[in-house]
Length: 274
Image (cartoon, rainbow, N blue to C red):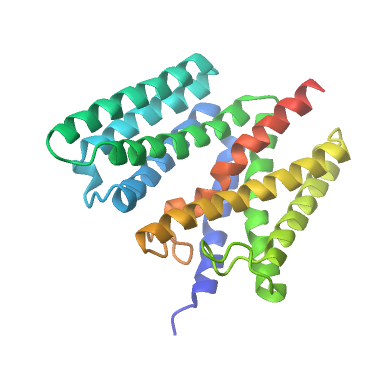
């Protein structure tokens, strides 16, 4: 008898998490950037397949343009060059504007295509860059683990709180399964994560800052999940792909983390300079 979707979910976690823990403990920042670039390329593949109506992204110029610009954004984050990141965003707008203009001249949708393709850059690599900035910042390895735990445990807390206690729908038009109780469970779970990190590895983290981080990170994780759900609903699909058994595609796994990263990076800066 094949395992249930719920069992496949935890089998995937049991395989992937230990590998990632060892990798992030041992890998230098440039290796983390390389992994982030690979994850970004896979997520962009799913994005272009779903939202740009491209069935073979590897044959689409827009996909490779997005991958190249993503590499520039993530590489700039690794080098700590905010100028490079801004330059990449400017180039993104100009490049996809030119592509939209040429397409419109041939009778294809112009502004709509520009919007969808440009959002791919703002959504995936620009938010992913926050993880690179976290890794290269003060106590980068600790804060990177902090970010990953906040995103994963928040998602898990929301799932189980909603499953056992959920009664009141959160945003039913986007995600009928999401509940207010699940949202509160997400926040409670992240407060537990903050408490664990404070007692084990970050005793200098103040309680007010830690609790504020837990609340903001939990909200950001849920926003990321809902944002991707909204996009999938517009395409009439349940999962962005099948990359992770029981979990869906790459975008399904990183949607919350993409929104959590920038929030944690802001708190990392506040904590560093307080």
